[in-house]
View 1 (cartoon, rainbow, N blue to C red):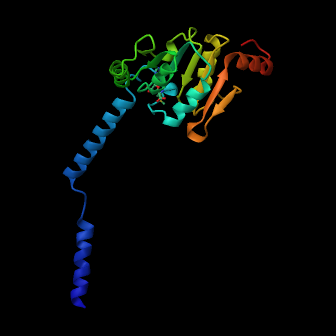
View 2 (cartoon, protein in one colour):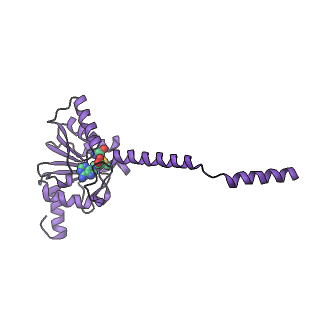
View 3 (tube, helix red, strand yellow):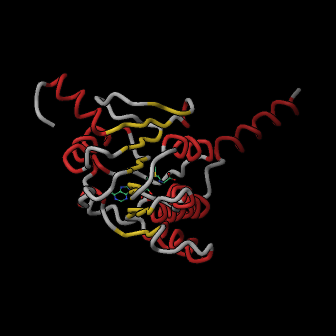
Length: 215
Ligand SMILES: C[S@@+](CC[C@H](N)C(=O)[O-])C[C@H]1O[C@@H](n2cnc3c(N)ncnc32)[C@H](O)[C@@H]1O
């Protein structure tokens, strides 16, 4: 009996005195900070000049999402802008369908990757180009096709910009996050892979009737 109490007491002592080793804690903290630094460098570089409310991190489109986007672009042609082109997957899919594409991207690492991929795979610049530009500060009026996989919080503002700039015959594809006040023409897929197509002339017509103002 005495023995077992002693054992219990000993166990307690071990339990109460076992604190995390300070060096180990410091190393774990440094490692986690480093990993966060690398992650944010990859996901968010070039973001310093963008207001907090407009920041959109990198998240690649899934295969289905890309296919759904392409489905909604069937029968279309001409110039296409991908707003936030990431590693270029939407641009490559659209350029192989015959569009002249521009990917706007502020993350230099992703931009370098996409440009190199275009070079390796022999996609000419006339079909797919990647530019380091903030699309909020870019005039998009020469594009008749626009794709955007961004974030729910920026879609309202993006809608206002596109309505000001795009020609009447333009089509916009929103991936995963629809425009809050726009009626979509059609959609493809479901859940996280759903994409929405909007024809600018119809959106303008709808908003003119709803708001009773010129757009
Ligand atoms: C959700 S990811 C989509 C990437 C890609 N379009 C795809 O479908 O895989 C959004 C991308 O937009 C970029 N981005 C965010 N704000 C931007 C801005 N103002 N101008 C250009 N690119 C931007 C981010 O760096 C990120 O790569």
